[in-house]
Every structure is written in C-alpha cells, then in structure tokens.
Length: 259
Image (cartoon, rainbow, N blue to C red):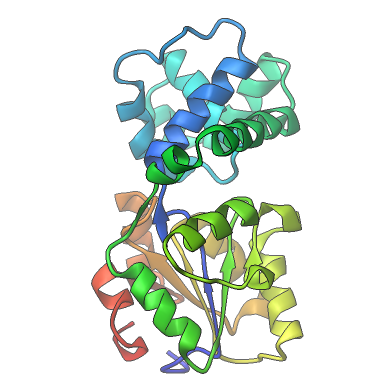
C-alpha cells in the first residue's frame, strides 16, 4: 500500500458502520404495500429470512420493495444473484412502476415512521462492534473523514447523533447529492487537493470495481468490508484482486498499519 495512513478516509454507511437489516426489511415491506395493490396485510412467512442474505444485490433504495416482489413471485436466490439489475428493471416495468416512484415510497415510509415513532425506527439499527469508537478516533485524528452513502444524509446524521457521534453534516454525502460514488470521490480529491492517501471502505464489491475502472481514481486505496452486505464470491474476488484490500472488523478497529 502506498501510505500507512490516509489523508482522506471515506466510509460507506450501511454495511460498514451500521447494520440496518431489520429496518430495511420493514421499510421494504411497507413500501411494497404502497406500490403493489395485491400485497397481503402481513409479509408471507419466511420472506424476511429470504430477503436478508440477498441484501448485497441492492444498490439503491428503490430496489428494496422490488426484491420482495421477485421473491414473492417465486424467483430463486440463484436467479437473483445471477443478474439482479436486469431482473429489477424488468419487474418494475411489468408492474408499470417507475424507479423514482418506488424510491419515493421507500423515503416516505421512512419519513412517516420517523415522524410517528423515532425511537422505534432508531431501535431497528445496530452498529457493528467497535466501529463507532473507531469512527470517533478518526474524527479527532489529523485526517479528513467523510461518509459516502446511497442512504439519505439526514437519516445517517440522525442515527449517529443518537449514538452520541457528532459527525459534521457537510461531510456526509448521501443519496441527495444525486451522483455516483466515483464522482463524489473525484470531487473530494479536488476539494481537499488530495493526490495520494484517499482510502475508501465499502461493502459492495461492484461499487469498488466502478472506482477501479476510473483511471483518474487510480490513487484511491480500496477496502472491501468483509462484515458487510457482500457474498462469499465477492470476498473471494477481493482476495485475488491486487487492487482491492479485504478488510475484517478486527483490522478496522486497529491502527491503520493493520489494514
């Protein structure tokens, strides 16, 4: 690795800092009920257990209720893992739903839930052991720390504040920035005049691969969080790719030299 300490450290949120699987499923189900008139009053038995291991395929929130749709229709995990982007687009097209409409349903479900019972919403999130303490140490160190996520920044800030982490809102780049993570990394490199020493911790191997493909981001050190929403195949791929660093939770909480 080119540096033993980053100058700018970027974290993804879901699957790296926070485990929101319980909230994800409940939000997805409520959004599903708004989007699909034939939805039953209660989720079918075992649906949550099918959904959780397939969370790695979801890149943005609109896909959450769509994943429930394909599972309810009887699509197998193997079929979903083999070509999820095509399957997701085909499914909403057949239902005559736009991705923006699905995203709006997900966001409004969250807003309604937060407004009516904030404590209950917050309680559906768990933070990975030791990560918040590590984040706090990074915030007081001599480096720039940012969060780049496809979750709304306001939700991220609320969750961190509830845990006593005062993370500056200006350094949270959520869904509202409306740009790919590659572009956000590019923007950060320019804004902070950083040529070397950008480290990016992410749990989706596909996102890291997009950074790899950007020639102007060749200086970014890429870490796949092995505790997050990824599959055994993703982790094997990272292990054999010289550009990717497979990072464990036990390494993350140590000093940067252990990464």
